[in-house]
View 1 (cartoon, rainbow, N blue to C red):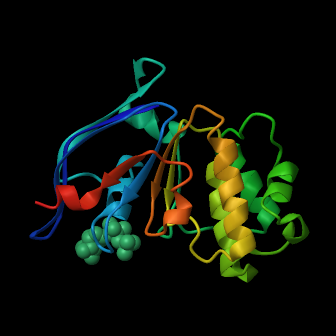
View 2: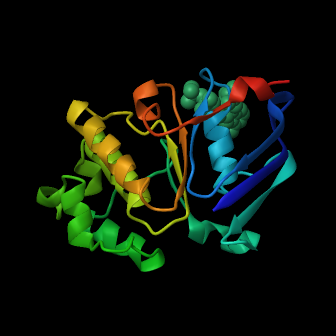
View 3: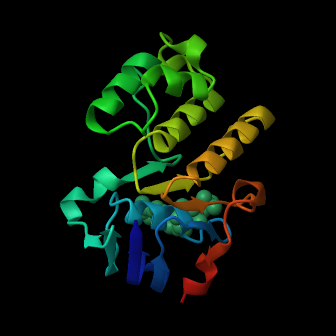
Length: 208
Ligand SMILES: Nc1ncnc2c1ncn2[C@@H]1O[C@H](COP(=O)(O)OP(=O)(O)OP(=O)(O)O)[C@@H](O)[C@H]1O
């Protein structure tokens, strides 16, 4: 999916977080969104996902040459972010069943295969509220990786992951890059994006 960010700006109260942000994301490319703490990386991801509105400017989404209507955009996007809550009252199996009732699973995958791939097969009937923070993070990431989507937004993807989890994440991104998904990784850690992204978007350039 191509995403065109046009004169995008966001303000909270009187503070402009970023301004005059113009950028074209190309289909199938991977982008790192960098900048110091508080520079607006998460805010921009949430605006691109449709979760927040910009204070100015607009975004155009184009899939296979056709503009996607705003009300349908969410069907093309998956996002993993610390701001996103999992449904704590569900077991893992219930959570995955619920999610994949509304979104299509990536081709070649089943719910069992997703559980296996995110190293959570033995937690099938465990309640999410009893997951460790790393297990929750793997589940959030798995929901983004294994949902059929054309734009994958990852915010601080390895937070709470141990070394094994970080390697698991890197392997999943390698796989994702073989699809035509556009990937945007907001990060403060170079091992989350260095191998995957040749394009860097530096939020500090859009500060004022
Ligand atoms: N709901 C809100 N109300 C007011 N200010 C907000 C709100 N959400 C975010 N901000 C402010 O917007 C700025 C950008 O925050 P954001 O979380 O997007 O930065 P970030 O680059 O992702 O930071 P980090 O690297 O620490 O995760 C910060 O100054 C933050 O305090």
